[in-house]
Image 1 (tube, one colour):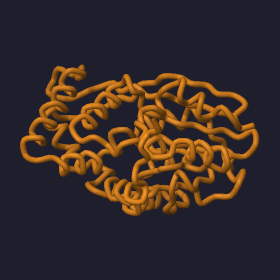
Image 2 (cartoon, rainbow, N blue to C red):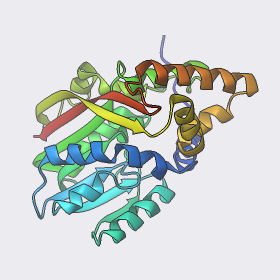
Image 3 (cartoon, rainbow, N blue to C red):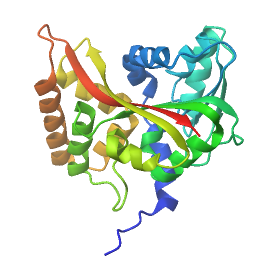
Length: 272
């Protein structure tokens, strides 16, 4: 039996609207240090041409530019790009930000030395197109670096909870599959000469308790806001309770804060 294909004609606009909802900049500030560490491991030298795919508000583009990279950031959400531009301007960094789709990048073949994407391109609905595009725009011998939440990690578990409460369109691949070593090897089976996969931990540290964290995401994180909007009052209460329970279960802080280690897969690929 063939899998059901999602209605992509409506899916893309809906995904864009979801990411533009809320205020992702409030969420992104809590993973800024993780992004800085990710870029530090990428070892960008001055003059390196860098493309940041699904760049959001600039968490990875900005440290890449600080390192001297000639950075272009691409994202589908225009309001996130505006925040990124303001952040770059505040640091007097010259970064080119433009609207674009990870499945159809506005870039030429072999244009970049390094292509990065952190917790971004993994959400595009056609993963095989994403892989092909990341390879296409990277020069031969260039590097591709991805950070993708794993299915087994905290964020993967939260995805599972929300998917159970508000199922995604039939046939849509789970974003966290990009966090599976086996799946990544399949998606990068062609066009890559070397692939290194390492599990890393992102640290979430919020100055308030799990219940407040859930409310924080409901207010500022577009996808969470969109998910809650699909549910009736009872469903919203149940989802909030399940998410609070998950945050509480994984919380390692004992001082009223919320501190969680969230696993992601660090993908490093060398283009043929």
